[in-house]
Image 1 (tube, one colour):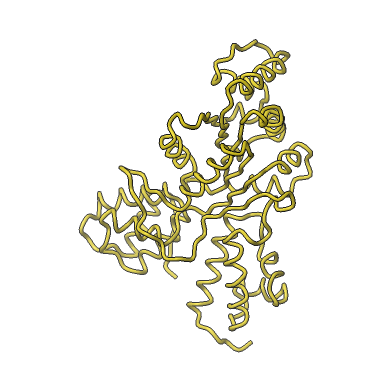
Image 2: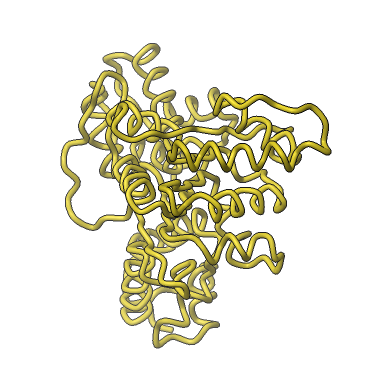
Length: 343
């Protein structure tokens, strides 16, 4: 194959595809290639770096990647008419608004849209993004903004409630002020009491840390929603990307029943490169080389948590000094044990 485009262009597209597929484990390079005029083997070979990128290869994969980022490729749950949202955007990003120590990124806006939709239409929503992308903080911001206008309850799973259905139901009961009957045999009664309370006082149920939740717990959530959504109860699940794969590829009946009821999916990628540039500038970090910034972007992988921790360290230890690729490699090694090399 004759090389028609530069190594920089080809490598940039490969990295974009790899970063996208990392937060969409339900897709593979073959899935993307099948929506082009290219052979599957060509797509895989380009992705693995074993062939150079010609004009046709680059243009086809760039086109399909843009569609996938917009949520238009292999939409999870599309068979039941579910809405799919993503935080991908091709337009120039506006200055990211900051309130105290909180930045309203595109991810934050998407989380708010899902919460608004599920609260208004008593629907089930699934929000997936990698750890540190800002899902939980976005929920806190939405609840602060809505105050008492929208009743909501946040249930954060732990090692016990994520695997024990009685523990899960008892935890919900406590949050709703329901007296608990001790003993596993009384789990059914407590569950029915929870359903009754929610029918009397409907609210949006937000379940966080769902990536470790067992299928039988999801069955409880589905049954809870089935018995209460007609009175105004909506459900939102927050999780790492693995949940999207489990829900759309599992053969387990418990998960399938919940998946078929999802009304809106939001597979999110976290803070974008343009948003990161805006945030870094607002934080006063301006004396940084282009190579160092690119390496920093590679290190955070869309994580707002990593970005802010890195900023804190840079402002504390390197204030006013030029920030180089060596500086960023040192920060990544110190904070996250990562070994970074510039391309």
